[in-house]
Amino acid sequence: MNRKIIIILSKFIFLCHSTIIAQEIKLPLRFEYGHLFSDWKLNDSVSTKVMLETGFPKVVINESFANKHLKQIVDMQKAPPNTQITLWGGVKNKVSYIIKDTLIFNCQKYIIDALVADFSSNESWKNRDMVFPLRDLSGITTINIKDNYMIVDNYTENFSGYLQFNVKYDKGTKGLYFESNLSIFDSLQSKETLKGRFLLDLGAPNAFFVNRNSNEVELFIKKSDRMILKDTNKFTPNHRVNLAIIKPNKINIKNIILSNEYIVALKLFGKQSDKYVGIIGNHFFENFITAFDFDNKKLYLKPNSDKITILK
Image (cartoon, rainbow, N blue to C red):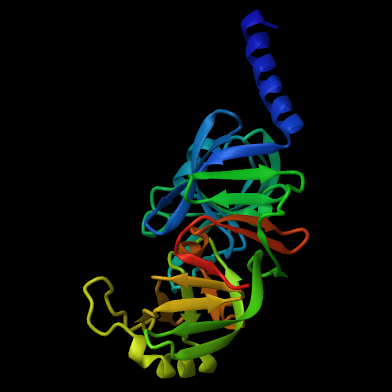
């Protein structure tokens, strides 16, 4: 073997071995256009623009990226005709291939069960190489939106300074959720409350969404009419999803009070959506250092924003 090749291979082995000993990988994180993105390395060489998800059940790979970088190294099977991905807002993407194989990201091997689709017409996914659910990562995943990093671990950190919540796992979305009361207050401290399941979704670009397919949500919106924004240039009404924007004085969920945020009410599409009265999105999580423990069904939150008050 050529001496130069031996040196390069040794450096690669040392890098991955060092990562395994440390048992954590720290990766960059960006918050853009209401979504979370990270830059990963495929097979230690290919730069990969990844969109992170917790409310979507599949790895989805951009067809142009797959054709360029994966066709020679994994088995790409043609998808059955008319196979589509339907997102919460009703956006559809045609699936061209299915991949069930092994890939190496950031020196860690993952068994991938992925769909390949054309991202060019999807505004949320356009210019990205891959959509990746956190559930498919190793161990506990820590997200810090404010300081622009994520950590993928294989061990339990010390979360003594964090709020701790028991959550449930939804196999259909590979996401975590909890049942809770969502209470909103106007400036006179009058309160309206919605009770039900809330999916924790890092791919949702607001603090809270509520699902207008639910009768409970429609009643909640009717009672909250005084807090709905009727004239605004920031939001464009969409008749298909029946959009409404609620702007409370403060929002209460669990023992957390959040101020200066919106609740977006709309019809959610997709076969998983009817399970939920609402979604908790990344504008909520940007106020915390957040750790998702899928194996033990735990959520850890450490406030790092002045928009948050914790009720004792």
